[in-house]
Image (cartoon, rainbow, N blue to C red):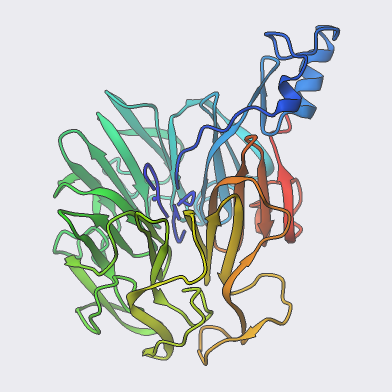
Length: 432
């Protein structure tokens, strides 16, 4: 996930989590419109009705507002508009809570924001730059809300004040960069906070100054002094440092977890960074994409079998995605990597449409045994300006500020008013 300069840094965003954009209002909405946003010959009663049906995203007082940014978590997503309103849909709270489910975007009352980011089951927003605040809500099992407790928060809770430059969420972590330094909080059992320990933090604490943080499922990377540094889980080479082993942090069902509790120098080029669950990518100055990590579904997008990390194919050093230029955004699903290039969205890895594709390398983690090993265009998208993903849910913001969604749709995470899976993109917009 990636934010500020970067979701899921992203929206991503998945694991994490995106570039903030300022789309323009559609020409159709502008043609013949008065200052109120309604056609000159329309009645006052017709204006809100026309606005609501014609706006690509949101209608505010008779004026169309564009979607500006999307953040995606497990079974939920939220969007920020040019009116600074926040709408969320799907299951908006954590798995341990009886969170309600909305199949369509629903406004978070009383909340205005300038940036949004999401982890697995929590969401955070900022309200601006100087003297801004960070407000979070959702699951708090690992202290990811940052209010000093592990109590879930069903309503937005202010947890940080400062001169904010960027806010980034990993699965259960958050990073904030201010004028005075960098702060982090949340889960740290696999060294994902990079402070040399495996102690989780329930409230923001100051870290070494970093910029351009990309926080993934259980790892993170940032631009340092002339080098990209990464820390956290390293089992599938997602730190991009070429090292086969680091430290043993803990165990899970797949065995010991290799990790780096302190930052290590990676081989990624300095540039925009993106982190997913088991993959990290960078976009260099020439807008080429470089990725490292798990590759058993072909999600490194270079069509090459690199070697095994345990039982899975992976690359511990960044590999360039071939034949793909002008990359401006990257988003990750589970086993899938999507790239934005010249308005088109191209994805590689585990497909969600259950149709035969290429043959995956042998792996216990890809039982479907089929994958897409080179970036393949998502049909019907030619004018995207940013993308976001998490799990098997994918989103694109169009140039006119409209939103397209596709993929799996449990609990209405796609926001189209249904729980029907969508193998091709469908439009999503605020209904009220």
